[in-house]
Image 1 (cartoon, helix red, strand yellow):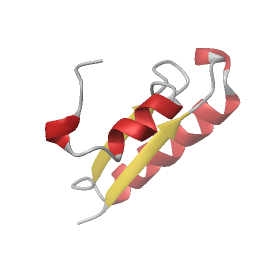
Image 2: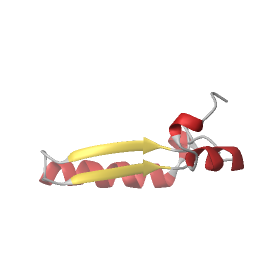
Image 3: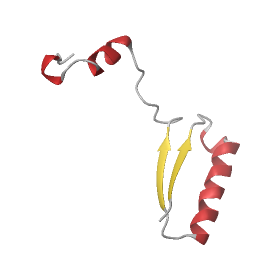
Length: 69
């Protein structure tokens, strides 16, 4: 079974050409392989949180030594 990771990154929303192209690609793929799984992420509308130095330091800190902040 195929899994497609569909990532949209444009902040232009419905005016985005790349969104239209990628949506058309996924739709066409699903016509040929209807059981494919599509995992969609929209980093243009819902960006991941900014990675800071504090976040990186916490990632390398043992869980028992981490602070709530």
